[in-house]
Length: 112
Image (cartoon, rainbow, N blue to C red; front, side, top):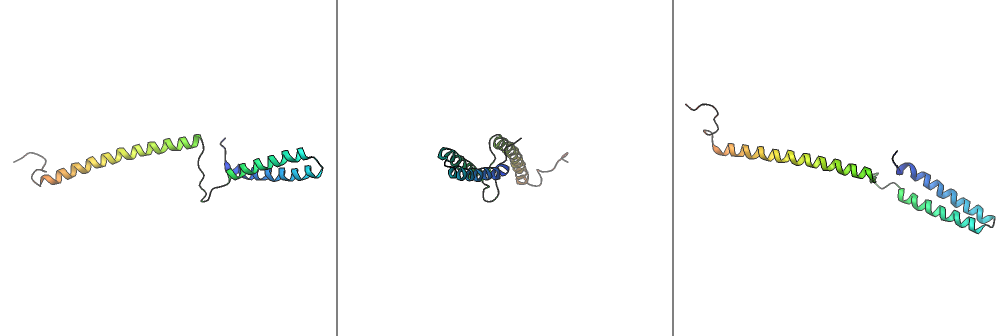
């Protein structure tokens, strides 16, 4: 199972709000240490939610193993494109040499 920020963002926001409410209740009951713990948790979950927030444009940066797999796939694709480009350039050079020789040199088969 992969970590999906789009799933965890609303969870972090809800946890932050619940801890903020818990801090209010704890402060109302004259429990400053308990309220401080809830404020710290609310702040931590709020910062986590901010980090998980969807980016503008909807593109998410893949993390960890997904990023490495994506990079490997790109490297394979670039290598394939380089091979194809090299082959295409060789074919173009061959055709240019053939066209530069003239019509008599291009004949294939026995010479009369």
